[in-house]
Image 1: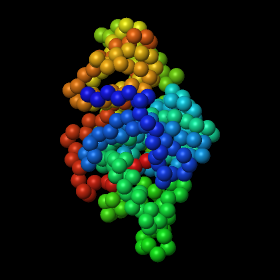
Image 2: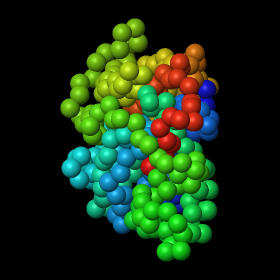
Image 3: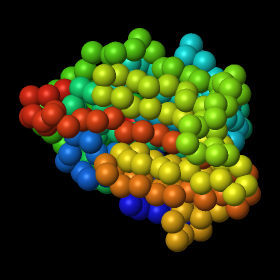
Amino acid sequence: MKIVQGDQLDWVRGLEHRGGTFHYRNLMEGTPGTIDNFQLSMGRNDKDFVSPRHRHNFDQFRFQLEGDLNFARDGKMTPGMVGYFPEGASYGPQTSEATAMTIVLQFGGASGSGYLSRKEVKQGMETLKQSGTFEGGVYQRNADVPGKRNMDGFQAIWEHINNRPLEYPKPRYPQAIMMDSSHYDWVASSGSPGVHEKLLGVFTERRAEASLFKLATGATLKGSGRGIYFACSGLGRVDDQPMRPFTTVFLERGEQAAFAAEQETELLHLGLPDLRGLSAQTSSPALAAA
């Protein structure tokens, strides 16, 4: 089990290969090079941030904390909404009219393609800057450098790192799925007095899932892995550690934790897919980042 107090982490500049200003807090990360690697971050973008319409080969959940994010034809995310962005499906462009803050979980999906770590993406970008420029999410090679002149920034980074063309898995869903949690009802959790759940969705044959839990004062939720719990509001304890807004907990398979509420508390739960039985292969669809 890993516990992080998100409000104690520094904001770091990121996504320079996109346009505008973006900062993030790195909440949790998995093991690089594995098909079930993941990255959980809290992102904050200014209104000048822009991301072009693109796709990637890993799955992604987003939970909107503050402000709005506009994804054009795919819809707009407002506070309290959860979005599932499936591997292989294009979405965007992404814009915002004001500062927005979002929880973003990126993880290897059912295709077994894996997830390229933020560190690897950063290193690839720095190398590519020696032979081209990143502008508005597009990588432009210098005129004297062989290769495709303009391409998606993430695609350029991945192809540089892996030295082969990027291929995407066939999308299991045609577009992003956006869920307005205010349109769901709270359902009492069997065997846990004072605990209610909004199950927002379960996705793909590998069962990635998203839900919200509400704990009444004095109630306890027995959480289990493999997944992430993020405290949206309230106060309490996670085992012997304090729980407050932005407290983040990662549980591996077989691990459990007791979330005890000292006042009414809401938790976001993102269940990671079960990729056991899949194996990473060099001929599998390419890794990317977004």
